[in-house]
Structure formats: structure tokens, C-alpha cells
Amino acid sequence: MAHPPLLASRQIVVIEGVHLMASAAAHALLKTLEEPGTATLILIAPHSESILPTIRSRCSLIPFRSLGQHQMCQVLENAGFSQILTYPEIIEMAQGCPGNAIAAWNHLTLIEQIDPTLLLVFSSNQTTSQLLQVAKTISQKLDIYCQLWLLDYWQYQLGKIHRNRRIAEFFSRIKDSLHLAQSQLVFEVCLLKLAEILSTS
Image: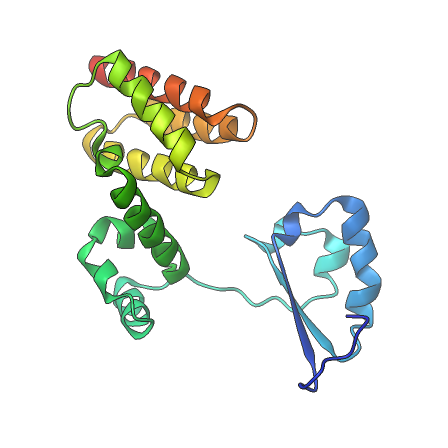
């Protein structure tokens, strides 16, 4: 923002995940919010309560609501992603957000290219060695975003079959663990433990 725009009359600055800012960084932003000059700042957060009150008081709140299924389909068709509409699970998992649906589509097509059996890992009984091989494939061939989406996909698929609160709690812990430990180990634990949970449900 210290440099004027080259062509436009105004600058637009988007800060995603503003709720994740450290306190010092958030306080350093206050002066810019008070005197933005010729810039417009857009701060994105899951909800206004997650932002420091001092920042929130200097902003106009623009809530974004989830779209209904019909609106979602229209947006996806207009954006050239009509093929997503043949995957109702993606539409449902996106929870009214076309961006989530498009990201999910990208993850799904990548996984199908690498190894489509990763999506169906719990549809057949697999041995311990097979599950450990699945964990290795995921760790080596999928980035962290794709790994997190795959966990969401498994949770969604299993949630339709097994109405078990333990599974939802388990997936939440596994997702947290991915940021703390080596992904192959996390997926090994995940797959072996889920196989045990499912065998007793």
C-alpha cells in the first residue's frame, strides 16, 4: 500500500484469515484501517467475533450467507463447473459455498488420477498391511490440503452409514494431528483406529 496503483484509481487489499493474526500484527493494522488512503481493505474471517474488537470497530461488517442448492447449481454452471453437479456429495459437503465445491472437485479429480481406491478405502475389508500402504500413498502423493479434504470426504461417507459421534470426534482429532506430526504416521493411526471403530459399530 506504500506504492500507488499503476492504472486504477484505487487499490484493493484482501487479507484472508484475519482472525489468525498475532496480536502485534493486528494492532499494527489499526493505523492503516483508520487512514487507508486510496485503498480499500477487505478482511476475511469466519465470523466477526473472532476478530479483535479494536479492528472490528473500524470495519463495516458484510455477512456472506450460504447459498441454497438451486443457487449453488446456477453459480457452478455459470463458472463452467457443471460437471460438479453430477457429484451430489460434493454439493452437500460444500454447505452452500461454490468455492468449497470447486476446491473439492479439484481434490477429487486429483485423487481419482492418483489412486481412486483412496476414496473407497472403507468399502471393503483391508488387511493391516494394505491400510499401511494406503497411508504411505496419501503421505507421498497428496499435499496437506488434499489430505485434509480426504479426511472430510471419509468422514462424510462414514457419517452417512454409521451415526456414531465417536467417528466425528475422532476425525477432528486426526485433522489437528496433521499439523503436529508426520502425515504418514497420522494416516496410519487414522486408518487402523477407524478399522477398529468400524468393526465394533
